[in-house]
Length: 368
Length: 257
Image 1: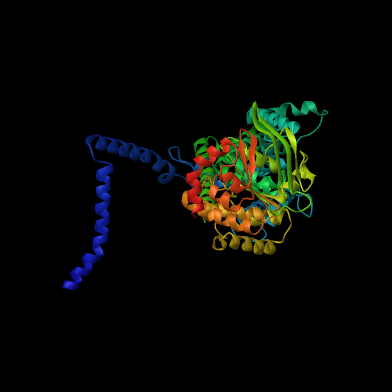
Image 2: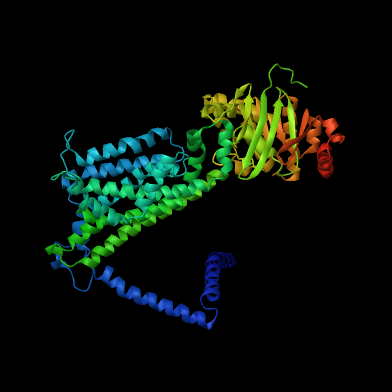
């Protein structure tokens, strides 16, 4: 009999102790003084009111399935629009039977990035070589087709989230080596190389991306014979790389300056020349320092890709906005923008979390 | 003295350097034979470090000629890089590469410059590490080591290139007092093994025990060159005598070790 009482007490007591701790915490932090009580209840009421407004609109009354806007309710979200158009938001006007090619490109990219970042992958150099030199060509061939039995899909058909990611990835990956060369150039003792780097960085960094894209569209045709055709996607990628490499170069320069002078001197004392010092001593240390700066730039770039609408490209924001102008789904702007907002927020939050884990890993590796 | 070979290892002649208007080195001449051990001392700002840094061209100079085994170390890239390979240097602030393990710090030069395969470079590095009594620290990162351990690893890194000459630029000045001895012991062992070295230091006990010659500098000039016995007997200029007087405390500490 006593044993039963005892055991039930043992079972209950940790839960009770935890509840007590939580109550004590709330009393100390939320309700300590009258002003705290007032603030806590005001904020709680505001939060409840906000949820009261959002939850029924977004979830309870929302419509998830339907063929056109006739299925929607005037007072609630109509996610049927997003569900119905999901394929287009992801792939743009890429023909349905060929969409596996887009998936394949992103799968190859994801796998090789994963292999590159994992700590003990054998033959990392091969993976890096593949990613930087083979993958861009392979990816283009797969997406564009026209060879090896793949049907041709011209770049004006590309769009949606896959185009957003393509612009972001191409912007960072191609800008990366260019920016390293520019950052080295800016500190170089060769005047011509230094001046050229400074001029490039200052000019490209001083222009808004939107102006670069406008110029690509409006000024470039004047510089070439009448009738020259420019692929808008090529223009967009070029503009983004011009812009991004200047920004990254300055991030890298900051990273180089964070390395004590003694490091280059120690490398020199061994007998290392300029390139060996850069490759084995200063570059690896610089790259560890600049992770937060690079990710910050990548986040800004992903959001900047929406500007390619100027060149008539439909990345995820523009394709959703265009979808809301479709007679079938006319006027569903709120749902569209909420969806796009969530997509961008998800992308950027993922990058931010990844950068934090990378920073932790680097710190751990140096302490190891 | 072992400098009996026909040709001196290092000849510095007429070395002059200005930092802006400041005349940092004035007509410095110095000849070092194979196996010779020079200790350079003098008050701070006297140009000791600058002179040593000119020898492996870490510092540019306006005037003068430096020859290693008769070959001039010019401004041209090949002669500078060649000379640096043949001259090992140990810095006051260690300057280990923080992103590499102790072992990789030591093997980096041999692997990338001498093109030694990794296993060979590593077994050579382990021998050097046992020489500086660090063999159990090979896999650690520099930030996990004490100052004395870092400096001993830095000495092993410099030795890994098989230098003909070792330069030490105040190797113990950044160390806590209790770590000075472990580094000096390693340097003394190197000296006993016949390593040619030029050592800038304030450790007078080390100088007394190890140096063949003591070079005393003041205001960018070599004021005095003497063998240790004569130098510490105060058998030279006033400036050096007063310097020896002020460093007597240090000298007592280090010579007791």
